[in-house]
Length: 59
Image (cartoon, rainbow, N blue to C red; front, side, top):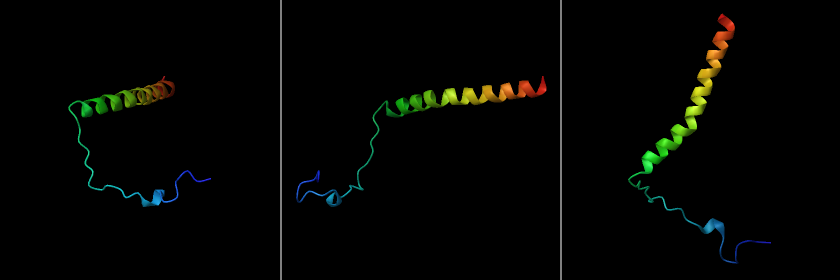
């Protein structure tokens, strides 16, 4: 079973290489907040892991 019609194939789709990404006013702020929110727990977890490791080794 084909999900495409007879003359409508996926191979015929041509990409638009000239398409430009235009950021709106708060886009970069939103992306930076999202990235910081994602990376902050990872960084704190790594810091905590090495702090615990150091404490166990040198106590």
